[in-house]
Length: 172
Image 1 (cartoon, rainbow, N blue to C red):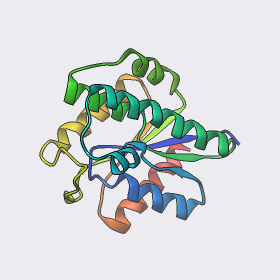
Image 2 (cartoon, rainbow, N blue to C red):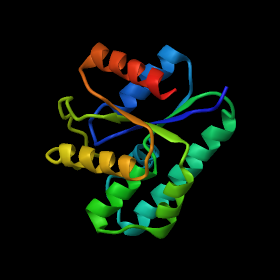
Image 3 (cartoon, rainbow, N blue to C red):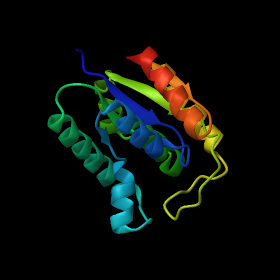
């Protein structure tokens, strides 16, 4: 069986982590939590250009460790380099060269792109309650620009999970 890396992507508060947990449980496949949240919960919500690059490097190491631990079968990633590129562009108007190079190496990624039709959930680590649809479209544009397989996931609660399961069948 060919290994598939499925990235659950999208704007803040679009249900990425919840969807990863549910898909992992339902399909009995591992998932890798979003590293930025782990870092910011530990170090606080403040960051700058340099610390964002540090977060990204630790994100890559976090995901590489999980991929090594699960060398066979499918795996879910809660975000990938596209999210960091959008974050760098929006906050610092910056496209870091190492990040752009890593995006080229992530050709095997397929995407479940979460549409922001869920109600915004306030969280001290979140920054974008108003422009989630714009961020969704930025994600979609990158996925299409790099010609990656994808499906858009919409819906509430069980419907969202059902739609994601249907989309995964097509991607796998």
